[in-house]
Structures are given as structure tokens and as C-alpha cells.
Image 1: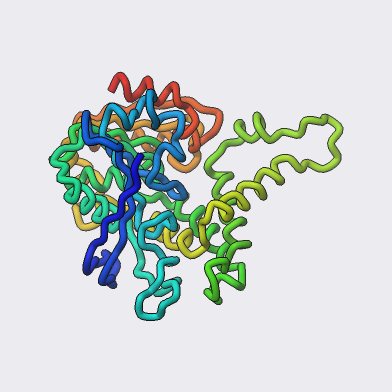
Image 2: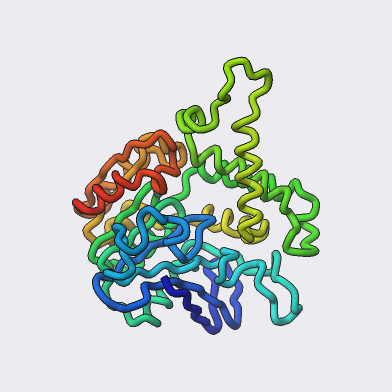
Length: 333
């Protein structure tokens, strides 16, 4: 996959505010050929799907950049290239921090649409997104319904649920409990809070069964359980080492709370009724964030949509781990 940059002038944000120049980073296949496959990434991923979805994207794999033209855009507010709170404010010559405009899912989609126009793509053969990537995919399929031939929405929703919003708030609280976060003296501000927020999030990404399979104590006579605890600390530290900053994480959490395809469109059902793509909607049986009963309730609002349920011991993260089922689902689709 090849990295590109696009600069957008006078970008207006849905919640108010505008920037004279916004940078959007995206990756594409090296050569324009085959079908157009557009992948929307999740919260802490990036625009190179070979990096975070290595079992699905790569030469010889289901999504093959040597066979098809694959596009993935780094969403606004992410620290992996596109404009975000860590970007330098040209007025102050320091990072924006909290002066960066609030970002919504619709802003992310507006940036993706700009990339699509830059690439002169008139038709997308498959739009696929999971989690907050699914938020973007659903929103875009509603916004430009005639653009997409097929769409796959996996482990996602057309509107943020109270349960997910509550979980997001606990992560913001973790960031705010770190005194260095509000000081905004450097991009390392809030790192302790970020480690905690990531650890909290990971619990919701996985499941009771999954932790039992992977993080159980190996010794029946263990006095204090430590394996799962050390795993949580490791995951928090890992995100910091990957270059994620607390400010971008905070803004992305806020963007999650902005998601509602029905806003200004007469409600969720009316908005989903606009989708024209041949659509498959998939849940994961152990997903605690987007449980099957929720996904099954809204999928019928999409004309002709097919609903499928995947099985996994690993909760929401099954969309990254259950490669065989995903390939089978998408291949039949």
C-alpha cells in the first residue's frame, strides 16, 4: 500500500469552527486496477490496512492490493497523519490541543469523500467498515447512496448507543484524571490517563470467554491473579509506544458520541432507507459493544440487506480475529 497526502482548504466542521488547511492521509494500492475496495478503519488503527488487518489485506490475501484498487483514509483527529489535536497550529506554532475543532463522524466522511473526488472514483465496488469504521461506512452509504455497489457493515451501528457512550465517558474520565492532560504542556500530557483509558476499552473489546482462554492463571495454586492485570498494563503501554497521544484519543472519543445517521434526516430508519448498495450486516455473537440483538433490529431498515451472525470467543475484536468466517461471509456476498 502506498501512502498519500491531500490538503483541503477552508474546511468547515459540522459542530462549528473551520481550518484554513486540513491534511488527510490515505493509502492506496500501488496500481489502479480491478475493483475499488474502500476500507474504513477503527478507532486506533490507521490508513494502512496491511498493518492492522494483516490476515485479510495483502498480496495473495482476500483483499489483495495487487489485484484490486484498495483505498483507506486516516480519519480526522487520528494521530497517524491526518490533521488532529497534535498538529501544529500555524498561529501559535504549537500543537492545537483543545483549540482543534470538534470532529464528528460526518467530518470524517467529508474528508473521505474529498479523497474519492481527488482519485476520480465514480463507483466503489465494496465499502467495508467495522466498529467506528462501520460508523463512517454507514454514514457515507447514506450520504452518497448511488456511489456504492456493495457495502459490508460489521460489528457496528447507525447510532451510538447509551451503553457505548457510557463506556466512552469512562475513558475520557481516565484521561481527565491525569493532571498533565489539561495542562497541555506537551504531547506526552495525559499519558498515564491514556494507558488507563486503553485498558478500560480493551475489556469491552474482548469477552469473559476470551479472557478465560488467553489470560487465565497457569498455576492452580496462584495466590494473586496477575496475568490479566499485566496484560491490561501491557496494552495501555503499547498504545502509547505506537505514538498515540491523549488529545487525539479524547477527540476520537467525542467523535464516537457524535454518530447518528438519523440526525436531520427524520430518524435512523428513514436514513438507512436511503442506502442503495447491496448490503450485508454482520454481528458477532459475543460482542458486548454492538450485541447481535441490536444489530439485528436495525439491519432490516436497509432495503434488501442480509443479516449474518459470526461466532467468536473474543467479543467485539472478533472482526479482526475471525478471518475464516469473514472471508466466507464476504466471498458469498
